[in-house]
Length: 168
Image (tube, rainbow, N blue to C red; front, side, top):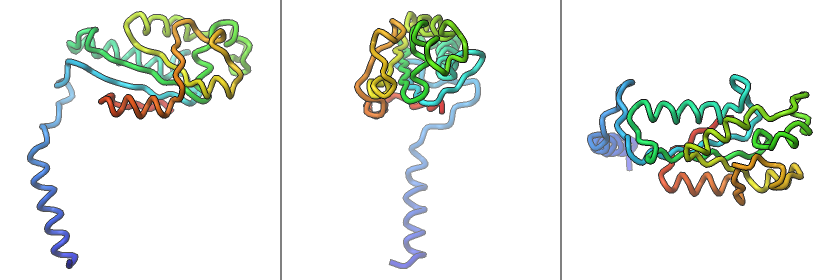
């Protein structure tokens, strides 16, 4: 097949597909207010306003959804932590003992973890990360859920229609 014919067929088929796409949302319009599904991935030790970046933005997004008319029961949010971000989910004693705490005696994320889970957000930690760091469930904030593997969990949630937001 000649390049010109291939290009013509490709552009024609792309044009046919473009007609079936919904119009883009404006900056003030939210078109999907029911069954909002979001999964956050956090693997780096990143901080925003003295708390975990992923927890910070999950809190902001949850509030934004509600302000834009999404009912609390329609917000389905999961935060999957692994790698160096895992220590953000430790209880106070284990957090203080971690070299990354930099002298802090309590986990500054504890209150936000609890607030998010009270609103139905799932905060999860990869068991492989726990094993690599020598942590047990007793080292974790009590609201944290342990999952067998972060990447499998992320894949599964994306296949269930969750939008993937990466905070690394």
